[in-house]
Image 1 (tube, helix red, strand yellow):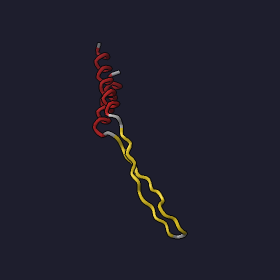
Image 2 (cartoon, one colour):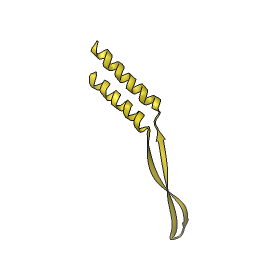
Image 3 (spheres, helix red, strand yellow):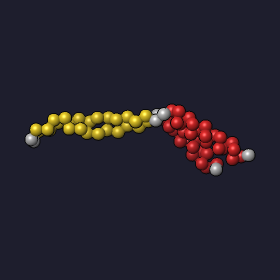
Image 4 (cartoon, one colour):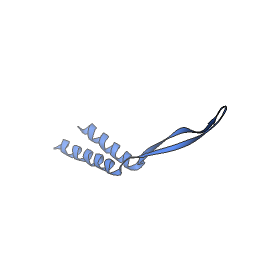
Length: 68
C-alpha cells in the first residue's frame, strides 16, 4: 500500500509540473509529380493540473490510511 501511495504522489506531482506532452506529424502540403512539399505540424496534448492534484492527494490519503 505504501509503494502505491508513493507512486501516486510522484505521478501526480510529475503531471502538475510537466503539464502535457507534444508530438510532431508531417503533412503533405503540395504534391505534383516528382515535386512535393511537406511541413511539420506540432500537436500538444495537455494534462489537466486537476488530475495531477487529485492523484497526489489520493496518494497522500493512501499513505496516511496505510499507517493507521
